[in-house]
Length: 236
Image (cartoon, rainbow, N blue to C red; front, side, top):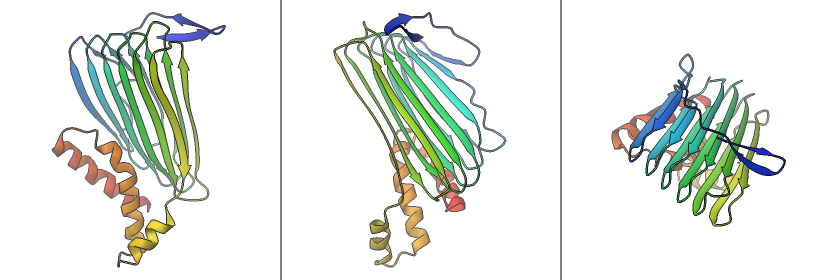
């Protein structure tokens, strides 16, 4: 765990608690968390990665979930790898807060974060993402993106990706976008006989698809895709 004090990096011991996903040395873990109304509690809020371990975590948040979701990651072992991805679909009056913090305290590691979301109706979504790289954590590759599409003029998205880098041999990037469905794409599809509503559905599925590609199990990916398509058709 790490925190900033007076402009200097201060190392704090990692605490392993009851809601910690502790990935031991040389172990690979893949986990898909599907959150829906009435079943929206994450079974972990902390991930610890030991040497040469790997975690692929995908969080899917379906319409109707109003929660404050936090995930903190400590990559304390060399050559550990993290893929933390997520999708959220909000179509009515949800109040969703998503916060991630990835702390690199060992070198030769990588982390990838991709979060894509749809916000419609009167929903309010906030995304806070932070990557911290300690002074001795050299040769780190860390990337984070948060992309959002507004489906209504009343929906609100607040996104704040951040980097705190205290090492000099790293490759890092972060970014965020908030936009709307592309009308030119809709016109193209409608000119080829696709109804307007179906064109919007296809656009939204295409927007979220890059996250689903990180689910390696083909059968599981197909089931999650069905859930996503059904949710989109309900909010569209």
